[in-house]
Image (cartoon, rainbow, N blue to C red; front, side, top):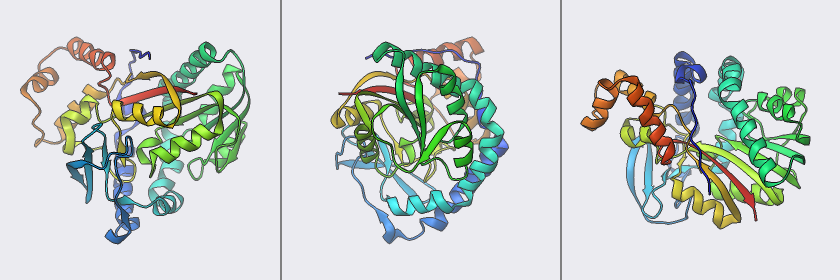
Length: 333
C-alpha cells in the first residue's frame, strides 16, 4: 500500500473564509438542536469502523457525546441522530441551504484550484495505473462542489458521469456539467468518489457496502475524510473548534478505516494523509482560545520556531500518516 507526501501553498482562509465558516458553523449547531433535540430519538451505535462495542468517553461537544473505540481508536458520536432524522436535516435545515447558496458558491473557484484539480489528477493517475486509460461510468456521491465534474470531464476518461444525492440546491449545477443526478449509486460503475462523506453519514459500513455493490469487479473507490489520528485533532481534542454534529459524527482512525474497507471487500492501494493545514489550524485555535494549553514542545513549535521548521513538521505529519486530512484509494476485489 502506498502513501504520498504533497506540497501546497494552501491556507485555511482560501477554502474556508472565516466569516463564512463561522456563519455556517453557527447555523449547523443551532439546527442540530432543532432537529436532534429529543434524547429518545438518538441511537446508540458501536464503532462505525471496526464494529467493536467497547468504548470510553472521549469528549462532549455542543451537547453530544463523542466516544473512542478501544479496538481501533476511532472517535464517534453515540448516541447519535437516526438515519431518518439526518436525512430530514439535510433536506430541510437552514445550514444546508446556506452551504449550497452561499458558502459553496463563494469558495468554489478556490476549491477548484487547491483541491478539486488535485483530486481529479489523483484519480486519473491511479485509475490509469490500475485499470487503464479509459472507463465507462463515473459517479460522485453527495456532491458538494459540482465543479468536480468539470475537472473529471477534462481528463477524457469516462463516457458517463453521475452525481449521487448531491447537496440539496446543487442538482441543476451538476446537470449543467453533464452529470446525471440520481438518488442511489448506479450499477456497473468503473470509479466512484466520496469526498468528505464518511464523517457525517449515519453508518459508514452501510455506505461503503452500497459503494462496493455499485462498482464493477476491479472498480475503484476514491474517498477523503477527517481522521482522528491527525495532529490538530490530537492536540486540540475537545477544544477543536471545527468539530460539531451532524457534520462530524465519525472521526475514523487510519487503522479503523483500513479494517472497514477490507472487511467489506476492498483492497486498499493508497492510504495517505496529505494534509497541509494541521499546524495552521492548531495555531489559529490557540490564538482564538486562551484556554488551549498544548504540550510545551508544540507551543514552542508554533510560537517560537521559524516557518521552515513548521513546514518541515507538516511534511513529517504527512509522511507518517499523522495529518487529519485522509485520502484513500481502493479496488473492489
